[in-house]
Structure formats: structure tokens, C-alpha cells
Length: 351
Image 1: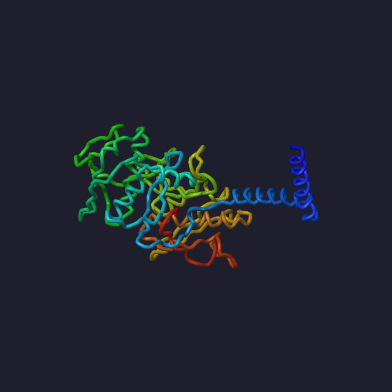
Image 2 (image 1 turned 120 degrees about the horizontal axis):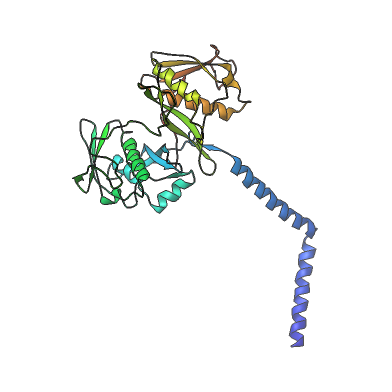
């Protein structure tokens, strides 16, 4: 017994000797180990600070897919348009788009990193979908579609379905059926007894908008979960403007309603000096406060995206040129550059 214990002690001492003699400086190695851990931690913290704009994400299109715009909801119940590549599949692209809105553990986990969520109840199935020559899509869904948790979720789900399907150029309105039968109202009272058309999305009420106010859509930025930001379409009411493009930009600069988590990218005091639309070109003149970004290029890109997204809502506008105090600015590729900007095809991207 004593011999075995002595042999074990000798072996341990021998191993320790080997370790110590193989390192020129064991304390230095220990220091390097902890320094590496600190560096790794700092790298993670720096990565966390980086902001990923979903409006600038680009990805190569996979085979047998089609770029398709889906409307998901965020934590505040706002609908967010997101372009995704959807497999064409046997059901057809419209049915595939509907399936992409249905809640599942996989879809929830996939979207939550950006702060977005599916909008249709779990296990909802597409029984049939037919698009008529008039642009009416008759969509037949399973009874699970009626199992929304609340009236708000129900209204958001219906609008998400409507806006997603009417992104297809051949669909202008939708008619809902449940298990092959027409329905007047859903479980929580949402009326679906008529052909549904786009009216407004993420409506923000305005004070003193007038009885004959027109609806315009503008785009603001919002911080999602993690490092993601995305652009949000917001419907506003406006009166007193004859030029609809000018009205939209006026509302854009007005900013979101007080208390909103939506962000306006424009520096305080920025004003519209003039808007002219001719031959598909929009010429927009801003006051020089728009340049007060402190050299922040991401802020400039956000302003350009907000302007061009807002103007893309007018089908006659294909390109935009931005002026500052009636002039273009030399030696810049940002606000006021002497170039025409294409209106964006998509708002946000995500895969």
C-alpha cells in the first residue's frame, strides 16, 4: 500500500515538473489566457453594438424561389413588410406566402432575432386559393384560422394576409372562406363579409387633420430585437395640400406621434422647400438642416431610404433627386448628391 502511494506521488511530481519546464513562463501563459478571454468578450460587445439595417440586407437568390413580400408583426402590433425568398413549391407562390405567415415553432424562432412574429394561428392550412381575372383572390382556409387569441391579433392577422396577397400584381382584393364556407365575422368580431381591399396600415391619427383629410403613407425607422432595425409603413391623415407627394413628405418630416417607438431619421428643424414631379422624376428640395448629421453616413442612408420609400407610393415616380437649399452638393454620395435615386423595390429584407 505504501509503495503504491509513493509511486503515485512520484508520478504527480514528475508530471508537474514536465508542465513547468515546458513553459518558459507559466504566469505569462496564464495572463495570455485571461487576456484572450477579455478580448473575446470585448469583441462580442462590439458586435452587439453594430446595427444591422434590414433595409440594406442583400442575399443571393436561391434556386426555385421567388422574392415575395410578407407582412409580419412586431412586439407592438405594427405590420412590417419583409422580402423573403419563398420556395415556389407545388402549391403556388401565393399559397407558399400564406404558409410563411402561419405560426410554428420554427418560424417563431427564425423571426424573433429581428423582433418579428408570424401573424396567423398555428396549424392554419390553405385549402384552396383561386385568383380571378378581376383581381379577386378567393382564399379558403381551415378552421384553425378562426382561433386568434384576441380581437387585436385577429385584425392584424387579416390585414397581414390581405397586404401580403395584394403584393402580387394580379391580386387587388381578397375574399375569405373557412372550410369552404363564406363567413360574415370571425370569432372576435372582425368583419370579412365583403371583398377586402387595402385601406390603411399602421394608422396614426393626427390632430386637426380636417374632415376631408387624405391618407398618405410614410416610412420611419424602428429598432427591433438584437441588432436589427427596419422601416415601418405608417398611414397618416393630411389636409390642405394639393400635391400628394408634397403632402406625404410634409407628413414624413412631421415625425411619428408622440410616445411612439418609431424613429424619424431627420435632424430637428429640417423643412420641405419644394417638391416637383415631372416625367417620372421627383425633385425634392430640403432646408440645410438636413445636413446636420455630424457626418453620420448611416443617418444619411436612413433619410434617403425614408424619402425614396415614401415617394415610391406614387406610381408615377420612378426616380428622385434631392436638393439642399435649391442646390446639389459637390463631392458627396449622400444627401444632395448630383444624381438620380431609384425608388426602392422592397422595404426590408430578411432570411
